[in-house]
View 1 (cartoon, rainbow, N blue to C red):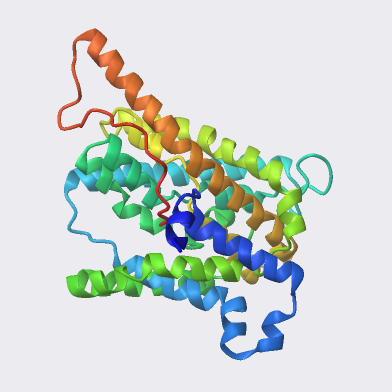
View 2 (view 1 turned 120 degrees about the vertical axis):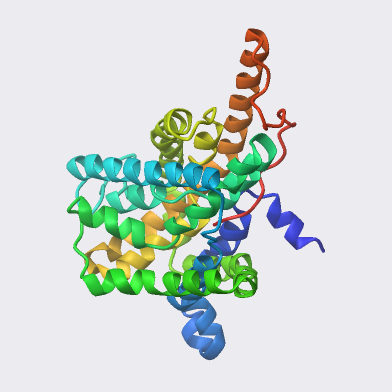
Length: 342
């Protein structure tokens, strides 16, 4: 059986398929973890420890010896994404109650869902798209996007906008595993390679554990708001990212559009923040389902939109006689989005 290939055909499948399986377990056998106990319960309820190991390994993958062009491109996209998420959170906090929308078409939508869906780029998807449609330097620009991994950026944005207050020790606790991995990975390239191998294999495990906190009924009721949220991520973050890529990073806008996605790992952030801020706990199931839907929507649409953007750019250059950008390969046929999450 080619299960891995089947999962790869689903955009975001490495994260979303285990999450749905976990949601099935929670919906139809909610007491399974406590019943079996031991290691089985650890897999079902071990979101935080599994994510702690994943954050550590993510930190180890960042190499500061990247070229200046890569760091400039990566830094531009990273800072722009964070600023846009901060502005979006600030605006949303003025119109959405702190305990979320209670009724109507967008029931369940919360500031927590908006922040966690917008502040974290799917770096693996970005790298895959830019390897096909961008330059080598643009493809390597995901190097700093790993900084977005985990709840730290969401915590900073929620704290800076006054939506939540986090004690300093919680910030340290959120970033410490990542920093330790970062230091070790830059001290020894063999350790970077060793821990880097663990990043993708751990994704299904924390996806399954996250799913065990979601009832399938929540996924159904949060479907439409999640789709709208995914489209909002592309529009709200995509336009500033395109402009920043063109005006600051010296690109043609494709890298900015390719970064306008929601990372699969962002699905974990509502639950982690809910553990830190008890008043957010009731929002976690709906926010998790919406962020997961946004991840799926952006994983499908971002590669398609990036391909159309690049084709349009090359067609315009050919018409004006400018030719193709130096060092940039001509656009290839659009392939199915790869299931890679960072």
